[in-house]
Length: 358
Ligand code: NAP
Image 1: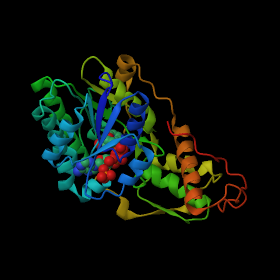
Image 2: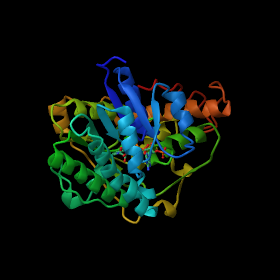
Image 3: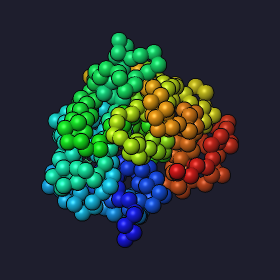
Image 4: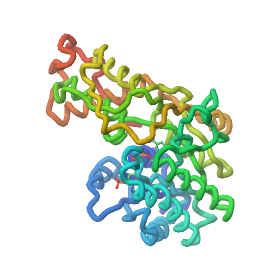
C-alpha cells in the first residue's frame, strides 16, 4: 500500500453522514474503513452496493473491545465518530440506550484510541449537535447560537450528546489528543433516514404525487430548524479535521424555517398550493419537551476554515423531492411519462430527475 495514503475509520457508516463522508474521503484518495454493528445488519447490503470501496469492520460503540480491535486493524489517521441513537423522538422512548450509545459510546471510542497507543497519531471527530443548545428563548443570541453559547439540552439525545461533547473536550485537554467537536445544526438530503421529519415529508409528497399514499401524519408544525445540506456539512467536517489545531466549530446556514415552511415548500414542488388536505396531526408524534427554535451562527467556521454552505433551503427541498420522486417511480415501476395523481390537473411535474449525489 502507498505509505502516504491516509486512512479513515468512520463509525455510523450506514447513516446519512457516514455515506456522504465516505464518498468524499474516497474521492480524496483515502483508504476508508467503516464500523458496522450487529451480526446481521440489514443496511450492510446498502453500504456494499453504494460504497463498495469501504472496508467494513464489525463493532459496536457500546462494546469497547470491538472498538480497540477496529482501531488496531485500521490504524486510522482520522476517526470520525458518527455512531449514535440520533433521533430525538426515539431518545425519549429509549433514554438509557441513548445514553449508552450516544453518550458513553463517545468515551469508549476515545479510550479505544488511547489504549491502542494511537493517542498522538489518530485525529478524532466527535459529532456534536445543535440539540445541545435546546432553543430556549432566553439563551439564543439574535444572530443564532455560536461556539460561546449556553447549553440547555431538552431531550435525552441532547443530554447524551452534551456528555459526549464534554468528554471529547476533556480528552483533548487532559491527554493532548487531536479531538474536534463539530456542533452541527440539522442537515438533510437524499440519504436522510425516512424516520426524520424532512425525509418523511419529501417521501410522502412524492408518493402522494404518484398516487401511492393519500396523507401524511405529522406532529406539531411550528418548531423551527436551521436546515442545511449534508454534503456541505461533511465537507466542513473534513475541513475541521485538517485545521492545524483541534477546536470546536458550529456549522449552520443562519436561516431557520418551520416544519410548516418545509411542508409548504415540498408540496409546492409538485404543484400543490394548499397542503392542508394531505396532512393529519398525530398527537403521538409530539415530544415531552419541544425545542422551539434553533438558529446557528457559523461565522467562526467561515472565517477560520473558509467553509461556506452551497445549497440553500429551497434547493435542498428540490433535491430531496426530486430524489424521492425518482426513487418511488423506480421502486413501483412507474414511468416518468405517467401523469401524476395529485394534483390531478398538473401533467408535467415540476421536478423530474434526481440530481447526482455529491
Ligand atoms: P444517522 O443517519 O442516524 O446514523 C447513525 C449511525 O449510528 C448509523 O450508522 C447507526 O448504525 C449507527 N449506530 C447506532 N447505534 C450504534 C452502535 N451501538 N454502535 C455503532 N454504530 C451505531 O445519523 P446522521 O444523520 O448520519 O448523523 C451522524 C452523526 O451526527 C450522529 O451522531 C448524529 O447524532 C450527529 N448529528 C446529526 C445531525 C443531522 O442533522 N443529521 C446534526 C447534528 C449532529 P445502524 O444502521 O446499525 O443503526
